[in-house]
Image (cartoon, rainbow, N blue to C red; front, side, top):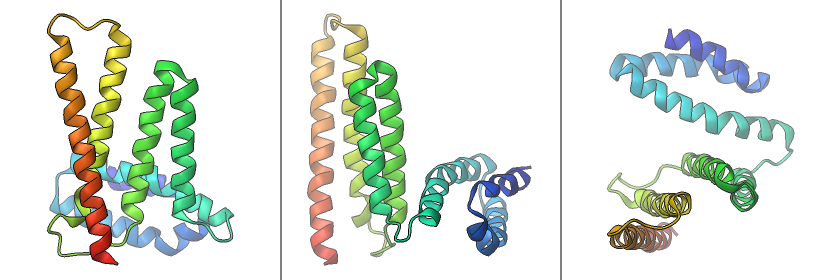
Amino acid sequence: MIVAAYRLALHLYPRTFRREYADDMVALLAAQLRDEGAARVAARTLADLLVTVPVRHLEAHMSRASTTTVIAALVALAAVLAVVGGPAGLVAAVTVAAVAGLTWSRSRPVVGDGSGDGRWWKLLLGGAGLLVALIAVTTATGELPSGGWFAAMFVGLTALVLMATGLVLGIAARFRTT
């Protein structure tokens, strides 16, 4: 059933891309389903579709499409949504920012021995997500309950430490690869 749904979802890709890669993509999905749980494969495949379909369409319509351009557009959209959209815009902005992060992470070439050098962005995004969640919760609740100030400070400091660690590791990884 997942393979049949995936075959249908492949029609979301541009025709030229689909003609060239559809059979290989279906074969890869079938192999993954044999090796892993269906729920995990389906979730990963859905995330992949959300990220790659828009990118492939932009590439099909742009003479020199750049993933960086797509990421910049998504980040700009997230910023606009966060500023003008209120609470619903904040949720939409976090979603768009997550798609931008996934797009960026999937566009980078695989490097290193898998020892964790390329995982710094998870710390950076995790810290940013924690900070956004803290801001959303404190905005929605208004005043903090008694004892809430300590919890909010702890969460805020944890978010800042995660982002700082991710930033430092990212800079270190960048200098190691150049």
